[in-house]
Length: 428
Image (cartoon, rainbow, N blue to C red; front, side, top):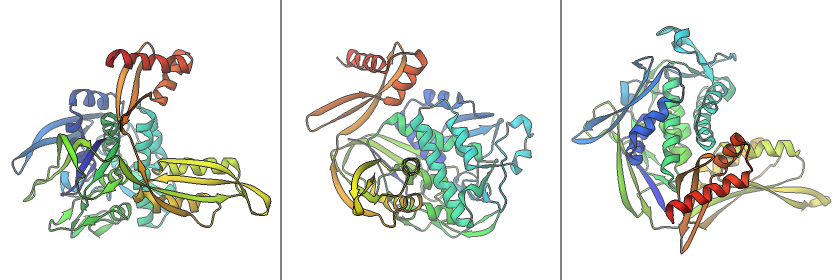
């Protein structure tokens, strides 16, 4: 199985994760062209070589209106990421992200955007739907953590515009690279969060900052001997969303190694190291959460299902059951990675009428997964390839086929078959 292992011995931030994944992907020119063509206002994404403790890697720079306006990542500028530009308000307001020419060079530092504004911006980008959904789910984790830290509903959490576009680039860039690499398994080491205190707009906070600590509940972390904030809320949310396991590197035949560099210098290499290779293990743990429900409308159940998917569920399905007192009902089943079970169980309790959630840890046998892209008369289509144990399957990506069929007013089956034919022609 194609596997990514993320080594977070010096924590993690969005730009460092993006740089390490970019080295794994390899085609920097295509990636940068895609990011710079998204239409984000005034944004230019650059990659450049960087060296730490004699190790050469890649550093990502995000320029907004020609200037580097980092969101505050300590790896970049030595002040806390996620605290000066993430805060809550006692009153709701709806300021959206402005275009730079509407605000001047610095006026936008007092403009705020809510989670819905950020998600609307992301969903409007010309990217595959799965990339946009992952990016919104990552931002949701950040918003919920800030809401918890400030004791307000997530709807009242607003993001300072300074750094917001930069953070959107980090999140979207990482989600796109994970998609392009197409690994079937993503794991990470325990996360070094640093120690000490950090000064922000609200005063002096302990490290890890409250938002970061909330996101990393249930994830193995440690303080180590490096003073400062090593793991940012953005880095924490990306790891929490994508990594299915945290621990030692699994047995794997490594093919590529990527180094994502920060700016700040320590007495050790300030980087995220990413490994890409083939893992021989076709078994993994999965958690099954379920509950019986007989007093909810189909609309409310559908909404709960959407919430669970947005927060990292691998699958959610409803099964008709006959319950006590001859009541027809449904069995809601949610499949997720073990580290997601507490968060998703909370969402089930919050968004359904059940008073309890059953959980069961299962072993599953899997095929390895990878993705390639083919050209068809209807445009590019991704092909999902699954293999292992003498089995091999190829399947066109549903979202790509649907989009192409709509664009060309063609039958779904016609586009689907054209994608399969193109794949077979290439790999015949």
